Structures are given as C-alpha cells and as structure tokens.
Length: 118
Image (cartoon, rainbow, N blue to C red; front, top):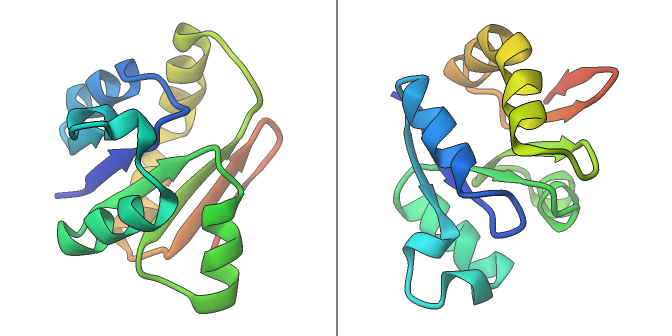
C-alpha cells in the first residue's frame, strides 16, 4: 500500500482524498508544530515511515535530482487552486499516478499539461 506525507503548503483535505483512494496518508500538521516542520524533518519522517512526500515545494525535487531517493516525491506544479479543483485534477490522473508509484517511480512531477516520472 502506498503511504504519503502531505507537505505543509498543501491542504489537509488532500489527506482525506488520498484516504478515500485507499492509501495511507498523513499531513505535516499531524505532528506537533507540524506547520513549522523543516524539509529535512519531513524527509526524515518520509524515509523512516516509507512515505512518499507530496509537495509544492521545489526544494524536494532539487534534492532528488542532486541525491536521488529516498524520499520519493510527488511534486505538484499547479499554482494555487481550489480544493475541489485539486482533487478533480488528481482524480483524472490517479490511475497513472498510482501505477507509476506502485512501480517504484522515485519522483513524479505533475503540472497542468504533463506528468513526468523519474
């Protein structure tokens, strides 16, 4: 089963959506002072708990390209959007995203026009 940690700048409702899809998901706000967690701590948690980081923060892909996984990363390059638009966007791509992650993609980048896997 896929396991995710949703980064601070993404809405906690994304966790609800992911759980609805049948995966294990937590938000950084799940942790004490979670809204203040630094990227290194999020990465440490992701590695320790075998979670995939879902983020809008470009620092995670930067580290991935320098060092590789872990942690594994889903990088959303979508700008600001309403919660329902975010879940609708993910819903139309969920099958492919899920398949890529189940087959051990180290990082998946999603933007409005493409999905790229590494």
